[in-house]
Image 1 (cartoon, rainbow, N blue to C red):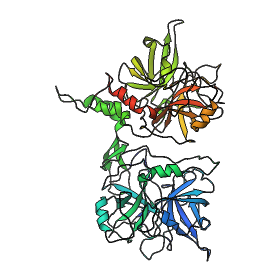
Image 2 (cartoon, one colour; image 1 turned 135 degrees about the horizontal axis):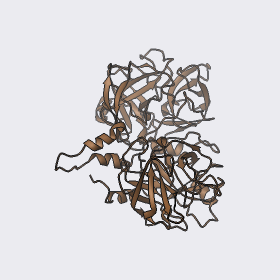
Image 3 (cartoon, helix red, strand yellow; image 1 turned 45 degrees about the vertical axis):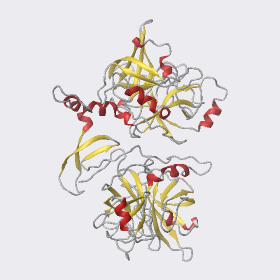
Image 4 (cartoon, rainbow, N blue to C red; image 1 turned 120 degrees about the vertical axis):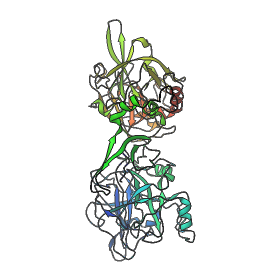
Amino acid sequence: MKFSLLLLLTIVSAVLCTSQGPDTRIVGGYPATIYNYPFVVSIVYTNPETGEQTPRCVGSIISSWHVLTTAHCFSDPNVENYKLRVGSTSSIEGGTLFDIYYIIIHPDYVESPRTADAAIVVLTQHVTISESVRVIYIPPQETYIPDGYTVRAIGWGAEEEDGALLDTLKVFDTRTIPLQQCIEAFADDDNINVYDQVICTQAAGRSMCRGDSGAPIIIGEVLVGIASYSSSCDDSTPDTFTRIDRHTGWILQEAVPPYGRSAASPVRVAPVVSWSATRTIIIIGEVLVGIASYSSSCDDSTPDAFTRIDRHTGWILQEAVPPYSRSAASPSNWIITNMAFKVLCALALLSAASAAPGSRLTGGSPLPVEEFPSVVAITYYYPRPQITVQRCVGSLVSSIHVMTAASCFDGADLDNMRVRAGSAQPLSGGTDVGVTHFIAHPDFEEYPRTADIAVLFLEQFLPITSTVNILYLPPPGYDVPDGISLRVASWGFESLDGGPLNDLKTALLPKIPLAQCQQAFADSEEASITPSVVCTFAPGQGICHGDVGAPAVISNVLVGIASYYENCDGTHPDVWTRVDSYTTWIMQVTAGASRMLTV
């Protein structure tokens, strides 16, 4: 059977090296194309004496400026002797050749015994993202990877010890082995330091070889290791890989664009914290999305079919009840309605906004609610003159809890407030539900606006469908790098003197440095620009009236809640409550709620 992790998904990265370069190759794999693994690059070495160019190692694109590979690839420290071939299935032709600006060797790197074998290559110009050029995720720090787990290796290395390097990309699947087993296998080998910062793999008839130094091993779309050492080109001994999650902090610290440049595609930390230990299910993070149903063969000649769980969620919730007179210690509803509180960094889309306390979306584009099923319109009925308007925006974080801004409730009568979910129109369609109460953060202040966050409680559970879904909460300390684009959505005004939108609209707003935001609001007494906020700025785009509470997301992770704007012309930054600063409080509030299911 084959296995793929959806949404952190697909295949990736590659390998390569020259017959004169470091050790490692792909043995026993099968051909692939760069379109299958568009983040893999060939590191080409030019012999300074002969001028001959040969593939030397493999690397993985981790941002539009950076490639991750092994430190031992650069035994010749002269960067002018190296080039990177990007976007080609071949290691010797095609694609685009890039020059190296400089190389960052891991500070703990030791050649022998090989330790902390990692290096970041900084390019002289950024790569252009295309079908054959992509950025791969790196794992969160201290990611758990089970023993016996299947990983995929990619490279151009030799097929045998004295053989020629491959011209065409090749991949194979192998399995992780216990660290102790690897330590014992290399007990008499002084060339490698086998410790908790390496991953070891071994599989019958498959291994790395000469030319595969730096080659990636991946799980789904996540880079978990880079080829560091192999004592042979067969399966008699394990292959060792530098374990990426042990160096995520170092990578994020060092992999920043060259001075004065910006990153079109910055380093991306995968929104996943666990892997499935079985190959008969598909998961996203800790969420079951498919179960194996049918395969017409036991090879890769035909696809595998999985039953799609989200299409049957309603039936599961209806039928998965305890036997008569029994109670459920862990009911199905907990997983469906509260999966957001697992605090995974995961994937999906966004949320929207609307018309009242202050904010709108300027310069965005329309979208269907299916693309942002977590967004809800918070509506308000005014007895005089008997009209209902979209007041704020919220995000579902469970099927009964909505995250929004505390400033949304200023002067509001909850009896006149409702929530509309599952519709691209704020005042029609979808499901309209009442609210029971809200809990604002205890530190909330209107002036200057501080801790502008609240949890709104619904009168009834909302069933999860294609138009109604939930966002994940970020873990505390979930830092979003400056320059990364946050996706937002709302129904707010197009201009100060305009009116609210009737259709959901979305925009991408880049995060800016906190210091830049503080400078922009230096003379303002309206907002408190502290580390507990996130600021975005894009000329001609931003929030306005009706966007208060609108979500800012990365994939399916809620990182910001629209709080404050200076005007509606896109000339000043927008201020968002930073959700990870309040994750612990949110979990405490929701777990203690009377409408919450318990485990």
